[in-house]
Length: 559
Ligand code: ADP
Image (cartoon, helix red, strand yellow):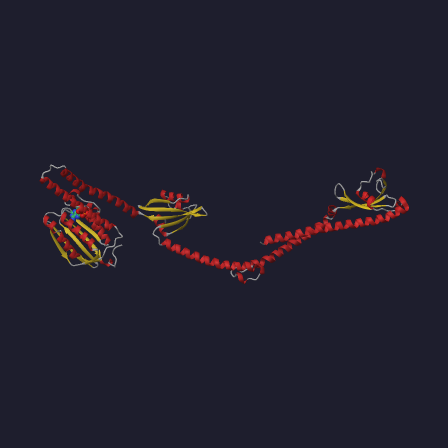
């Protein structure tokens, strides 16, 4: 600004100086021209008197100086000239000043030389005898005069130039200093220039607005930070050059990044699906990809960010979908298993019914077929019931009625229900321990204990025994179902809790197993936050314990 003011004032000074010089010269020049014409007029008057009285002899002792005097006859013929031989001069009738003088009595004319460096001023007056007396003189024009004055003018311009520089510098300094000294922290406390008051008032208002906006932006940033930091999903914002701008700690954790280095996000994660999601979103379309990383599956959702219809970056969400994908795979497997399990009894039923429909079957055979159809139908009912139970346990949103359940009483009821089965196999079932209660869903607890006891009888040997024991240690209440049956091979111990898993499929089917009993026990335990332990010795027996933690009973059990 200082430089600009300096340049402007210097420029103004120089323009004023040069235009003043030009104006002065123009005025002076026209002034001198008029004065010269007046002089010519006065001299012409005086000479014309002389010539009228004395004729051309008047010039004998007359000093004409730098003036040229010409006498022209009324027909234009030159009869006398002080600077040229009259014979060499042509007819002057067409000269402007001569023609004017013949008609009007006097005439003036100014004519420039070819080089334009000088001009000649003519004045002509008509004498009494009709001849015309012309007097002329030469005047140098402005440029010629200027050329003659180059030195003094150059000196004046030089002095003016130096003075302009000094003064312009001082003026600009004097203008700028108070502006530089303005206290912009308190704009309204300044009184440097009255003209600056509206500007300072505006700055003051803007300062308040900016302070408020900064406060609000800070608050928003804090809220944003709080929200993103509490997200379990990873959150990233990148610019159009893939440079990481913002991220939350979940994103670093999920992408397994220890140190965020400056530069492209693609350098931090090199998986193909991640790169594709970034590239596609920056090309303008929403991208959704599944990324495998450290044995886990992540859903990468990337959306482009627009400003004035131009892509300026992308927002990326990283969601851990490992459990969801596992669940989906399990459900797919479950559906396939269910279809398979249902198909077998249904095919049998259909086959028997078809044979009966065709007729010619003895009454005894019909009885046999009917029994088989009944058995298969019962199997189907048991299977469908078990599927319903496990599906209900799968449905996490279902809220069951919870109550204090006495596990001893419950076990006693179940043993009673299974008495016929036990008697058939001659298995002795005993109940031991104390009356312990847990807060839970009676229906689920009943299914869990029923399946454990049912299995202990089913997979027992003739004349074997089953012991059901209810015990408590501190906050842990346990139910142990011990049998003296066939046992479970070590390789199958983990897997028996999977849906439709059976150690010996045909044996299980013969004794009416659906393969869902222990899966129901496992899900029931998960529901009640209980632990299951299994001990088994082949051909000796199996012991399964479910332990409930009473310290977790705080109102709600279900998730
Ligand atoms: P199922 O309806 O076939 O009994 P379960 O889920 O209850 O299905 O049990 C799964 C498999 O575990 C059974 O098929 C059986 O082979 C084995 N099993 C379960 N309980 C016992 C037990 N007490 N003794 C020996 N094997 C058992």
